[in-house]
Amino acid sequence: MSTVEGDDEQDLTRKQRREQARAQRRELEEAEAASAKRRTRLTQLGIVAGIVVAIIVAIILATGGGSKTAIPKNSTEVNATVGEVTSLLQGIPQSGNTLGNPNAPVTLQYFGDLECPVCKAFTLGALPSLIQSYVRSGKLKIEYHAMETATREPATFNTQQIAALAAGKQKKAWHYLELFYHQQGEEDSGYVTESYLQNLARQVPGLNFAAWSAARNDPALATSITSDAQAANVNAFRGTPSFLIGKTGGTLQKFEPNTQTETGPYSAAIEKLLKG
Image (cartoon, rainbow, N blue to C red; front, side, top):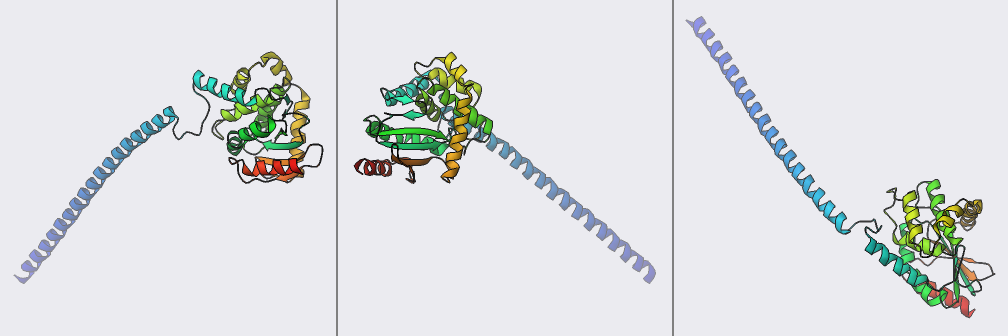
C-alpha cells in the first residue's frame, strides 16, 4: 500500500506541476495578448497623432506662420515687395555693387552671403534707416561684397552673386540684392534655382532681361567675387554680415556693431567719421 500511495502522490505532484505549467502558460499568453493590444492601441494613437501633427503643420505652412521660407506665394506679395524695394532705392545713384553718391565722404563695405539669414536681418532691419538717413543725403555710400558663409555649394554661391552683379551692369544691383533678401528662402532648402534667379530679375523695375542674361557671362564678375573672398581673408572675417568703414579714399577699418536691427552703432560710427 505504501508503494501505491507513493506512486499516487508522485502522480498528483506531476499533475499539479502540469496544471501549474498550463496556468503559467495561460498567464503568459494573456499577458502577451494584453501587451499586443496595448501596442496596437499605441500604434493607432501614434498614427492619429501623426495625422493631427501633419494637419497642423500643413495649416502653419499654408498660413505662413512659423515658416522660415519668405518667398512670396502670390502676385500681391510680390508686388508689395517690389514696391517697398523701389521706394527705398528710388533716386539713389548706383554703380556696379555701390549704392550712393560715389563722392560720399564715408564708405561702408558690407560683406554678405545672399542666403545668410543674419544678412537678411540686417538688410531688412538696420539698413533701410541707414539708406534713408545717410545714403540718400549723400553722406554715405555702401558697397556690397560677396563672402560665402551660409550657401552650401560654392557653384550656387557664385551663380547667385553673379546674377546680382549682372544687374549692376544696368545700375540695378541693389534692386536685385534687396529683392533676393526680401524673398530669401529657408537655409539649405535648395530654393536657389535658375528659375528663382530669373524670376528676381524679372521683378527688377526697368531691367532689360536679355542684357542681364548676357552680362552673367562676363568673366570680370567672377573675378570680383574672388577679390571679395581675398579681402575677407585679409580682414579675418569669420561670418556675415561683416563690415569695413572709413572715410572715402582712406583706409577702411573693421567695424563690429554687434547688432543687425538697431541703427545706433552704425549711426554713431558714421557720425564720428563725418565730424572727424
